[in-house]
Image 1 (cartoon, rainbow, N blue to C red):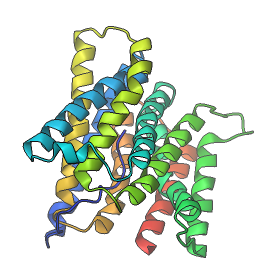
Image 2: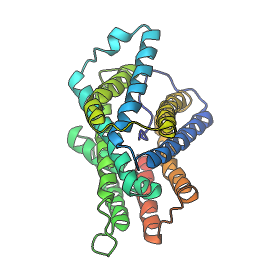
Image 3: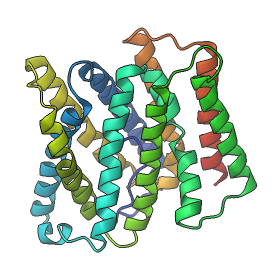
Length: 294
């Protein structure tokens, strides 16, 4: 699941924020559909196999894009290779982990917990980057943690150990974002895309092959659809920040949670109880408050 904010790149934002917001919202819808297909696939196919195929398709597309632009040798030599490998590892393992969570949790519940990643990123940025952590952000983090506890509910007869898988995915994605801030100081957008996809594909190749189960025709179609939606979603985000500043688009990332709820209820027949819905709202409100206040 590649559901974070738009990557930093070299385009200059244009004065068309409405178009940027619409494209960002569309990207979130695409990612929600992508995750719904993933939820269907993980019932029979290992997440690492699915994500291995997806990343190889993404990597081949990114390499072709770089070759078309005549910068292939440059994108294969990042300024900070160790940092790019770490970032790619965070991304690859996050994709596998959230897919694993979707095997045991509903789409709405998994995304509710995953939505805590901006709050985790704030804590990590304080530790790694030395960014300030003012009192209002600490309050938002505490509130988000309380929302997660409402969903997990340890000690209240409804403990869901699988919920920690979704929280682990959120932590990995938060680490990916913090690493992305460091990488953006040294490498451009296209270099990062190539490194994330290619190195991530290499990381998942052995686990994916060891767990290989030959998909049937329908499963191959879903895997290809997931791969296509992943590329489409990222292209929409890239295009979105050409029309509006990335900071203005951050609140729209929470539309992914709304779309996940709609698909979970409408397609999979999920029925989150009142406490889970309340927890999701608290997490989303905490994240939105943190983004808007910033």
